[in-house]
Image 1 (cartoon, rainbow, N blue to C red):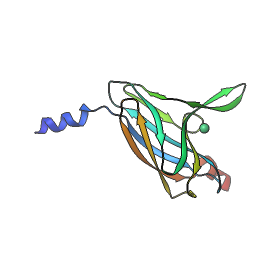
Image 2: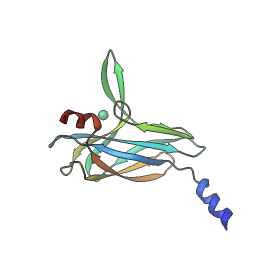
Image 3: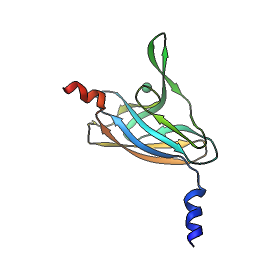
Length: 140
Ligand SMILES: [Cu+2]
């Protein structure tokens, strides 16, 4: 019985999400960004292939690229999550671009993100809206 429990805990290597959050944007903003860490504890590589949200009209997977000293965003079809790896979506790098919020969002609220993977796995993530530390610094 104990052995079965242990096996169940490690057998399935589906990707897990951690530390999801949405950066608070000024009222009326039509685009927001979401960040999170995706950890693949398994031995098979996977890919994030789509993100849906009931709170937004459209969600895109973006990378940030610096070219000629200018940061620009590129929409990705998929985001690879290698085996035994953690892929971090963070300010200045990969992020989820959330288009056209269906309700006004402010810090303290949260949004639901539905992540779909190439393996067929699906993950529902609740991401709190909060102010970025760099934004908060402007208050002082
Ligand atoms: Cu973007």
